[in-house]
Length: 505
Image (cartoon, rainbow, N blue to C red; front, top):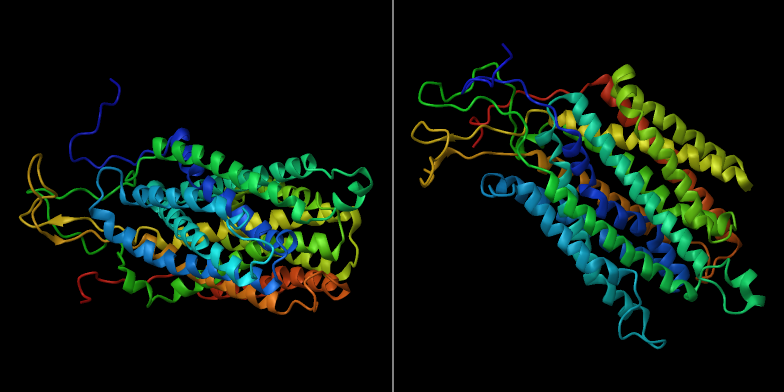
């Protein structure tokens, strides 16, 4: 006789997510990834080289976006945690995801479009003021979508290896999104040609005002494709599949046994050393990934003096390399562990930094360097996200215990006032870590833009070496800081204090 369904109230083993559920979750960040690819890779280049705004003005807009994102991220995380018990129909994470998606769809196309109503006599400050509200709305939507999507990992995953697989699939689609953006950029740059044949050799290889339409069409393409994948996420992902403890009823004790794992509120995380260890490691990781992505186009255009098609092909090679390496994360993590996997990725990035520092002209070897950078960034990003999920683990979801001895209201019954409301602090952890990385990225970019050595906004001989050393510092310098953070985890492994949620006021 085959096994029947589990008896009511029996503790059934958690069922792993189906392939369709994993894939539908993985595409939920696709719109954000498409927009982030354009934001980090092309925003400075578009504002500085195409729209001819000053380096400080371009940096100020990027800083505004990062600060807005950094401020919105913990607030969204906190509100998502508070809404955990109130949004029953679609789930609090998916509700915030939908709000963020709408904001991104409505604001992003305006960032890469000409200023409406601006003319040749319009001062730069007025044009920058025009872009400001669209950037703030976009960053709020981006933060809401990111936090909602990240905080679903502990909710959906049933074991450690499934967490790694979800983060790896998520990053694999991040790479696919970047590949899509760069392939589309390459195609649009080739379609855009100079009307004068004599000017083709010079004008077609240099970015300028003639490329405004290229970036505008690229942003519209990004929005259209991303909207489709966001719809697939909402249709295929069900929130709340994480296995819970047994529901209490009239015949079971309301209090968990003393051996239960500790469950932390958001304020408890601020007293945990491991929270700051993993947070610094995650911030260092994002600095390496985002700064290298932001300045790779500047490095190719000004330091290496390559044609403008390379601003699409080199990032494309980077993310193809990252795509391939992301699928190795699960077996590699299983064999050598999180720390050694992260350290391996750091070694690859440091090798890239040494190559750029020692070689004035890379020539066609720039493709090999791009492979190193792409593989290293993919490795450390996937592993750092897995470490964050490990930090949260089972410490963020508390069983709801209702007054009157019931697990919840019956059908057609109003809910009693809960003796203990459910507390979910996973979104707060992701929000706090994202806050640090957003603000750090914005300040780093503004500092770099302020150090721009040319007196004119047109690149001179001094800026050719400038962007080369920016790439070295963004990968090698921050890579050394990430190594120190990793050493702290080796000396003091991730451990959380045993907090009693009812003991704190």
